Length: 159
Image (tube, rainbow, N blue to C red):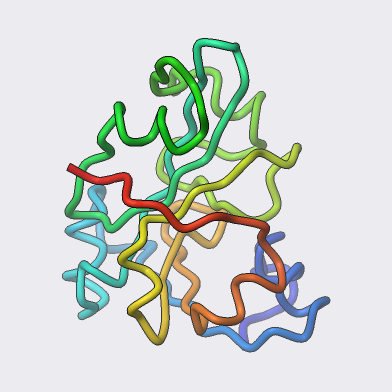
């Protein structure tokens, strides 16, 4: 384990709930995209998930987790949350809304609780990786453990 000051809020939350996780650090690699993150960490890109924050036609916010090499299907996503349409939240609004910056947005530990949908493909995985709440950090944990800290639904949401 890293020094306590090096822990993110996501790590603290998982430890508080006594959930075992693996922290992956890619801070000094210069990679940006999720596919690059998966490559530098030597992980299957189907297992590495990105966190996307959206806003629906009703002005309600939603969080979607999907494999880094896939694209969010906005029509499927809107249907999954019973919205007429959805769009991505602007990067400059992300910090105020979630407490996270673009590239370091985790589904855990956001300022508010938002309805969260995870791509159905995650159900087939033993472990899942997602942002640790800071650029350069990924958290890996058993998919079955995620339900202990995150209320979500599984739906098909990718193109």
